[in-house]
Structure formats: structure tokens, C-alpha cells
Image (cartoon, rainbow, N blue to C red; front, top):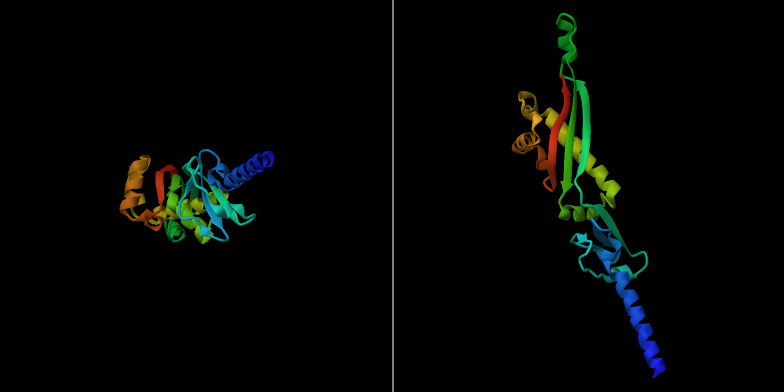
Length: 194
């Protein structure tokens, strides 16, 4: 009788241990999300949030799986650009006093990727953690700002004092179309000199 109770107790402890090993939300800190990738099952197609119940057998095999952890916050970037207007050196030589046709412009931009996009980024191998996601979004922010600088509408108005106005104009002119799964939550010109 005592052997049966002891064996049952050992079995229950072992089962609880196995259950905890496969429970993914225990591996994700509060306020963060995760994407599970494993050698045997590939990338799990849904984002994993802390507090949601999800048990996967792939976590039971040592070194088989990895949970990529990401912050749920919006990431902000400051992009600074400087240069000269096209053909500025040519026109400067013809105008009295050799005027300066250089520009300096600083953008502040905040980006947030859609949750499903994180899964596809992990699946494609572009990111495997928060630092790589920040680098990727930084490249997206730079590309968006360069597209804004090259656009005609940026240089024709006084709208740049308003973030919503600049976002609306950028959307209307297709600046964000290259990144449909990234939401631009804030975009404004911090400083400009021409």
C-alpha cells in the first residue's frame, strides 16, 4: 500500500514537472510576447502572450526549441539627414556670393509591427530577438524617412508641425506601402534647415 502511494506521488511530481516544461507562458515575462520556433515543428503560427495557456511538446526535448521574446511597446527612432539639393554646386557657382544649398532634417518616427508580422520575421530568419527587431525597424524607419525626403509633397507645405497631418500625407502618397505590416504611430519633423 505504501509503495503504491509513494509511486503515485512520484508519478504526479514527474507529470507536474513535464507539464511545467512544456508550458510556454512560463518562459515569457510580463508585458512581452513570444514566438516559438523548434527544430521538429518549425515556427508556431501564432504569437504567444504571457498569461495565455499554451502547452507544446517540442519544449520537452532539450535544445529543440527556442522562444524569441519581444516587447509589446512601440519603438521610437530619430533619423537625421543632411546633404545638398540636386545640382547645388552648379547653381552656387553662378549666383553671386556662392550661396549654400545644403539641408539638415531630423525626423522622429515611432513604429510598431503587427503581431502576425513578428511570426513571419522569425520564420524568415530576419529576427530572433528584441535587438534584431529594433535593428530591422530602424532600417524601416530610415527607409521611410528617405522616401519622405525624396517626395515632392514634403517640400511644399507647412504641415510638418503636425504628426497626424504628415502621417496622412505619407499614407496618401504611398510612402508606407512598402511596409504594410508596420504601423507608424508617430511621425514628425523635429528640426529642418535649408
